[in-house]
Image: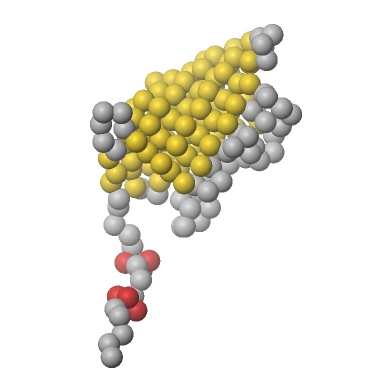
Length: 151
């Protein structure tokens, strides 16, 4: 689900006969509000306007711009990031770290639905760790409205 054109910059590019484009060195892919960076990018285009991208690095990084307080920006890193524009998902593997509005998640695997901004994390042999920051008291619901009415 790219939002407009896809722009890629890198130190080197190679277009293979198998339809895979390879980019090396200071790689950056930008599509709408989504940005992927790393040291290597392998890109396939299964159909016009669609792409499957694998970005690797130590770390490879993802940034997704925020859309107000309800949808804060997301910044994440991992050793491998796979993005499939056909289904709008990002899969991150190995040493995953994600920051969403100050809340931090770490684990070994993460699936991110870009359109829904839904995050699913897991671990292989280890647990997922999440640190949730306290919210501003002005954003919390009124406790009086949460109590059941008597009577």
